[in-house]
Length: 333
Ligand code: SF4
Image (cartoon, helix red, strand yellow):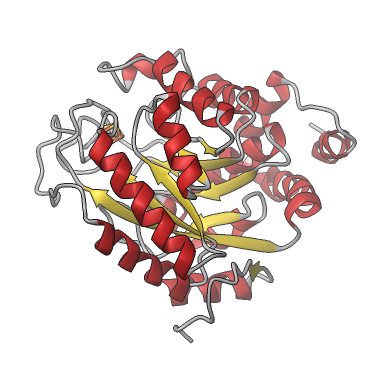
């Protein structure tokens, strides 16, 4: 496959075909640097050498009634993950300081739930108003499950910039991962997010047993939704979940190929290396910055991760630079 020619075509406004996208995922290790080079040319056109950092906060942990087989916060997962109710406005606002201290462009507040109740929406709205007063340049993303248009408008008018709602996998494979709701339910919320003018953060999880075609179909579904940001997670099978003990089929090189495929299919969109980065990419994490232009730092919802200082050094050592939000001078040196 002529990866350079495919990149040339995409840079000129053309598209990668489904067959070519599958070929990216099936390419040999010998071809990997050529694939990454082609993806990097596209990433560079839209994002230069910048990396935007995102900091997560789990504002409600555990007790989720949904049955996503990978998720340690589902009630169907048997584990000792910390469980707590929706946090207060004060604690959510306090958490924004940690994002500002780490040069994060976005502060991502996430709740384990099927859908937020009115009081939870009010809490996020009030927190967003206060965060915007304190850190006007810090962008706020919330992830609260299914939305109605009314709730989405409330979030938007309170200053929330972006809403996350992942498709997780292809429509074809979805029932192997979730049975308590449908793929179309997720698409519906994603469409509401776009309709009210919130940025849509919408991605998925690779390594759950899906085929290469499923991975490509997920990326195409995301492109069809005109997503603004794509978090790419890699399965890190958590204790107590249905997927725990499943052999993880992803090698570090497979993760790099997956990120490159997403970049080819959705060229102009923010692609974020998300959960599972440290455990699946391992020593190859810096190479993921060639297709991706964004990452979470300092851990995830229920698992720790590489600390900010190590991430910062990795980004700079690889020749990239952190996109400064302007939220405040970093407190961490
Ligand atoms: S809806 Fe979200 S929090 Fe709930 S089980 Fe699924 S992934 Fe986990």
